[in-house]
Image (cartoon, rainbow, N blue to C red; front, side, top):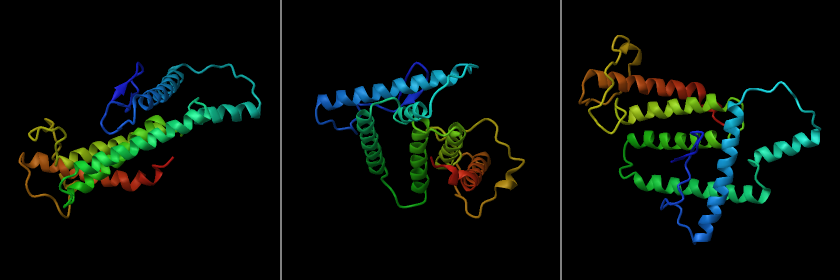
Length: 217
């Protein structure tokens, strides 16, 4: 994951084995296209951070339509935008292939949560870089919360790689609100881990039920 000076993340690691470049020229062309995209994202970040101007420039409908088309292409030429979209599609396929190859078990419910988190994280990448909706940040924050809840569920109450990590405080007083019909029986860290798992599980599906149908652009 690379970041520019505006702390905007771009997941364009062209040295990753997933790309499998045919030759150096193809890789250099991809670097050029991704650099154009990074410039556009920097420019948009600067515009969002700048104070609103009171002056409004008079424009014609034709000018507005032309600017809209340029914005949809992230200020690239039609040819560069088409090539860039092919690169994004190639990257998406490569990430799915790498992910599917990493799931070794694929025989019980745990892979369902891993698959769901991977899909939501891919959607977060799209909304961070390409969504044009005015409420895109709010919708992306819902997805990011779902991904974090999924991480807690996958780790059965934990979040980090360390199985012995738990937050110092877990509210046990309202644990009755997160009852489940079925729940894993083994929690090595006891009641706090179980309650945190149950809370994350219930909050996750409440969040999905209320919001998932709005996650489209």
